[in-house]
Length: 183
Image (cartoon, rainbow, N blue to C red; front, top):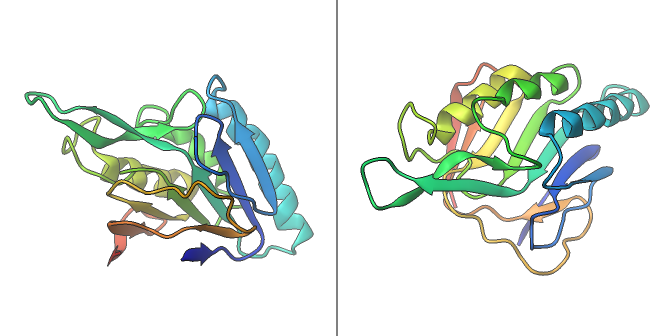
């Protein structure tokens, strides 16, 4: 199965992603050595154009990348929720770059392992706080999973993304969790 994304939509695909990229109205590949702020500048311009060309239609931004996994302090275990491997990386330290999308983007869907996972509550590994901050800075709805996502090795049809795995949280633009779904 797959999830259909309404048009218009824009996707930022990581070039470090070894699974098929998604295709939307605008599809941008982000090299792993690119500052995400620069990639977001380019994407924000494309979002403004899409919003203008579609007379202000609802606009969805897809982020398609790996989620950061790191060691959980005081244990021998690794956990998710440490950030997004898009370009040189997105963490709670640089999440304010999402404000570039505030004027145009209505919803952000993060297709990355454990983007909303909580491995270190209130710390660097708190993906819930990361997603909350993304929603607040972008002033948009954010959807992200707490578990590992299974990418398909084949190319998806345009305007489709993979099904979700695990628990998916939806955040309002104020950062509060407004929906919890289990897949």
